[in-house]
Image 1 (cartoon, rainbow, N blue to C red):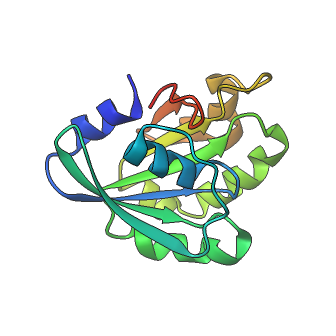
Image 2 (image 1 turned 90 degrees about the vertical axis):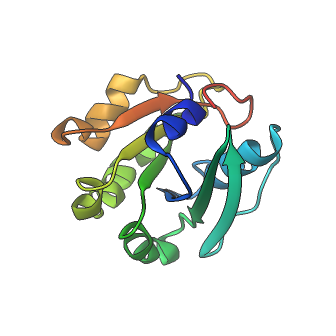
Length: 159
């Protein structure tokens, strides 16, 4: 089941989806892949970028949040009225899993109230962490509900 199917299952009308995650996780690349169906390399997002798209008949307002430290304080405000929270992680960059966990859990009041989808990106690369390892590293097992998907914003796998 890909991200499009999950979004279609959860959404029934125009909804706000906030995409967070550390810098270089692939958030903007995923938004562009959803729009064009192809891989396009991007520069880092500064602040946030809003994109309205329609996927399989569902209109979505995607809020792509910059992942650099300077922009992470903006995440909470956008998530407060989101229909879905997407947290993206670079599954090949294991040395940043602790940082990713810390940033995710700063949002704990929201992620316990809003459906959380964790996207483990870069599954086209060798040596990616298995989903179980990512669940453990981010302490996702402490949540009552979440979805986690392996994806590649470069090849379209899982999207």
